Image (cartoon, rainbow, N blue to C red; front, side, top):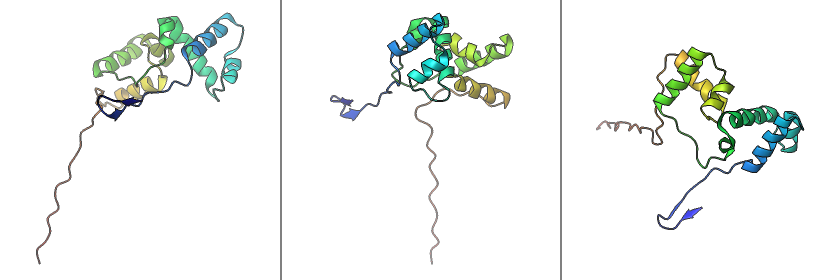
Amino acid sequence: MYCLTLGTFIMRRKAKYTFEQKRQAVLDYQSGKKSAADIALELDMGKRGDDRIREWTNLYKANGPEALNPKEKHSSYSKKFKEQVVQDYIQNGLSHKELAAKYNISSRSVIIQWIKRYNNHMEQRDYDPHPEVYMAERKQRKKN
């Protein structure tokens, strides 16, 4: 996509699966018409496709059909939100899948990273699209 007013290119995420494909997959899986593996095979999802079908189903159950809408950009989460999810994991013993569904997080791996940071006593960080740039100091030349 090209933005005429700014003269810049805007890159958007292209969803692999449409809302309708996801919704139909969830409905077929929930009704028992097809197994998660069969649906994943039909959609050419690869080895872990059946897990993705179950994740979509959990998102659908917890947050309704809107949770299946493709996202136009990568999600960013605040430090406070990350800490809330980790505390929910610790205090209530929810699984990564349950947390992803409850908080409408698209991937369990994000939650796993947050928990690892917590367990390694590392501070959760706010999302910063522009990381700091470190400038090297100028090297001094020797005069002959």
